[in-house]
Length: 492
Ligand code: NAD
Image 1 (cartoon, helix red, strand yellow):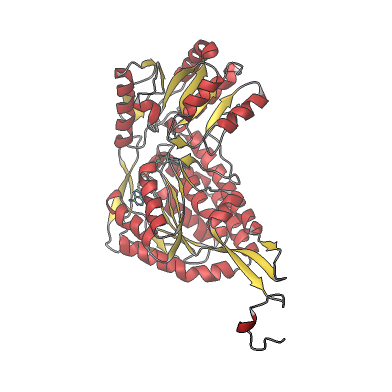
Image 2: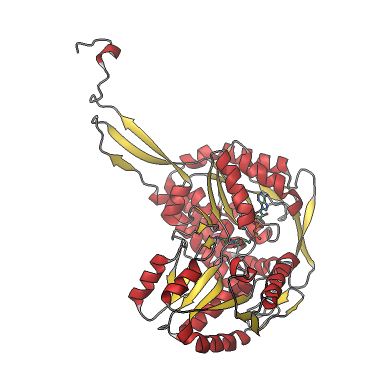
């Protein structure tokens, strides 16, 4: 095995063709943590070609063998969790508790993908002509995977694991913020697990090169499928480009999720859901609670307790278990959070707690008097800020929640389960959770959003559909009649 900060192409560790590298920073102290290879278009092209060469043999393996290798990847990851946890803290600014969750969850992603290899099923259809009429699923070929920094191990793994299981070969481009835990270390795991050379490739690059590398990963004619997780701004362009080239594309994008607290909610449970949902990983989760919508009759009690609970959260070095609030990933993200909070305050919002920052560490913040005219209501914040809005009854709460271009997930707090289910059905989101925060994921569920939150679904059976092509194949058995003029012997 070569230098672990290199590209991984065709089973070989190698420097970028221009020999360039780029720095990866530790957001907790601003220092350069490592340098990784800075690939260009040519490197991406080579990785795609390596994947194309390896894919037919990979697809031809028995599904049980692909499953065995993915299970082995889960075993190797289990043994090497600590390395991932360290790099998730250092390059990702993650709280140590979050890294334990992330590695544990990702092991499940590989196990679920191994199971998915056994579930690529087809259909036998009735035929007008008595044919044997089959619907079969086949891998797409080469799939490009582009992933974000906030849960780099989970979201890279989720992006490609089922795609691999069903027989595709993959080129992964992790985020420039987290190229090690989102890419380089994953390649080490898959290499150690024995995934054949070329089946899985990793190309890291800086923001400077991402336009050309990204373009190659989408436009190269050998690429037949794209899995993108990231912002709506970038993802909509990726989807448009892929759509123009008639390629299958799954884009998991931003969110502005609501937590609705109804008049009959268990207030303590609602406070816990709001606190976890708003502030876990500093609010840098696509399905973070970004709008808390509370029924007027319980608003005062809920808000007071929510603020009390928020004030307990400790900000600081995320290596320490007590500090569950670490740094924001970079200055650009911090500036966005600051701008949204300042704009809201200028328009009349009240800071009930937090609001300040020291370097990249932003205090968990609760805002009251939030209105729909504020950016904090409409735009994704991706930071530890919980805007509270008051609703007059369930219909208004739903109407406020649905007043968003996004539609990823939602939470509904109520003691009445039937009512919770009714509200869930009326929300315009891909996912909804009753008596829980909006932050939920499991490896086998159809994860995804509507509207500006994306297109397509990852996970389990939905992932199989996403990364396979459906084909119709028939076998004629003497029942098909052509018009007589076309026949050699019309009399027969
Ligand atoms: P981002 O869109 O800036 O970057 C995502 C990925 O796209 C990175 O790997 C980046 O290098 C790459 N990229 C950037 N420009 C590109 C281009 N021109 N062509 C191809 N690729 C390009 O997003 P981010 O800041 O890394 O992640 C945060 C965003 O991701 C938030 O909006 C969040 O809501 C979203 N997200 C969504 C989900 C989901 O499942 N819906 C999960 C996590 C994060």
